[in-house]
Length: 86
Image (cartoon, rainbow, N blue to C red; front, side, top):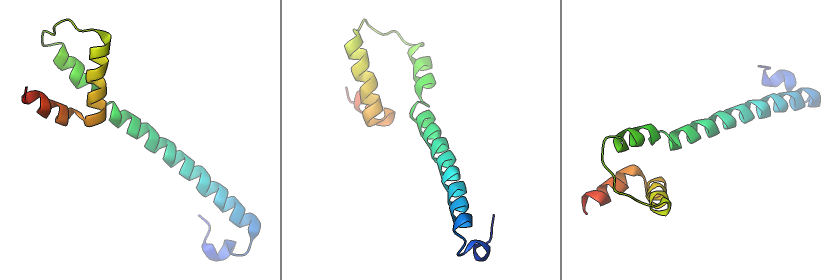
């Protein structure tokens, strides 16, 4: 990493350093996006395993989608708490 004093005033060096930093920021941003996406879907396997252990009455696609969207929107914990009150 160039020291600030060596690139100060040298426009080519400054532009090169900016390009390096922007490329690094792009890599970090992409890694963050992938991590957030993985975090958003981290509960899928647990839910599917739990569903495999219980009997579920017939439902149509719109009902299943509504349940999935509620979990996505409100979070599994909140939905589970609400279901406990039924």
